[in-house]
Image (cartoon, rainbow, N blue to C red; front, side, top):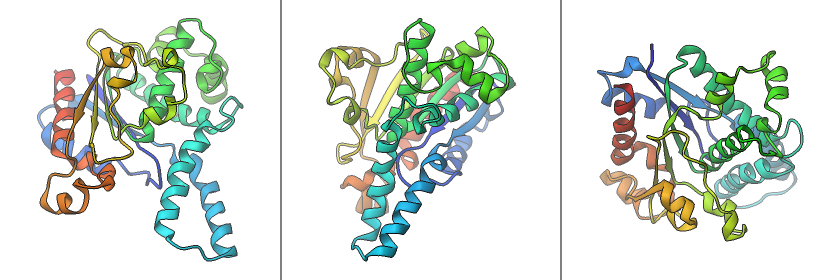
Length: 285
């Protein structure tokens, strides 16, 4: 039976459903002796956003000829993701709620397979904000606070509607990240979402477990990846920022490491892989 689980969360832009296959393969090679104790899962929410983005792109492309198609698609699908997740997120069935639904279902799958498993999250780019919001909402709901959006607005109603039953207390605690041992974020853009908040309102998630550690890996050349410790005293106490040069291989260095496209290179970087592998090895025993 698995002793730990790795749940990946992808970032912004056009993302295939099998986005995590390569990093799981590479981690599996590093952890071959304990791989049977690890449940590898990927959280996918881009399918919620892509159909309407494709419709918008097709309408514009058919009506007129714009230049820089690749850049425009990157902006439309990338920043469209971020805008879509925040737009009318309080509505039932919002994109925000559906993205949280994807996280909750994968966590429930881990629980049913191994209820005592520890959770390790690996999130990239926009996925860092998506996951952070999910955990923040969950912790607030379990503490008796009012949550205005997402599955934790009314977790009982969500579970009845989505799963056909009311969650047990243990299931609810597990879905709230109550067994989360580690979070590794790469190319994190949480600062973009909190920059307009008052300083007193920039609060991170609470530490889910005593052994919990949050490592935030960013490349100073990546305009979409940011350090988190400077955000507030809460982030400074919770997060360990680590600056790297993503994509150290010669070809990657020439193409990516010196410019903002390093945003796409984290999950093939040896330092990132070693960091995640070390946490999983610790949790897998």
